Image 1: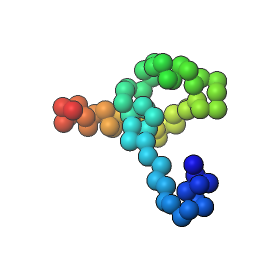
Image 2: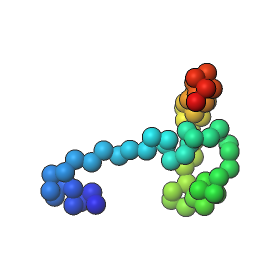
Image 3: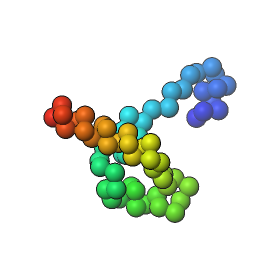
Image 4: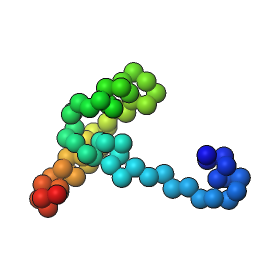
Length: 66
């Protein structure tokens, strides 16, 4: 798809509002998707900055009750 868009001059914006689920649940929570990606090229290892951001999002959502 990206090659097609480039050829035709179509802009592409990568978008993952919940960071592939990382912002949808507390750090360390198991999920089917997380377990399925273990040991594959799609496995994501969270850095300390990622964990800090996830915690801040979690705190903010609790404060706003969303």
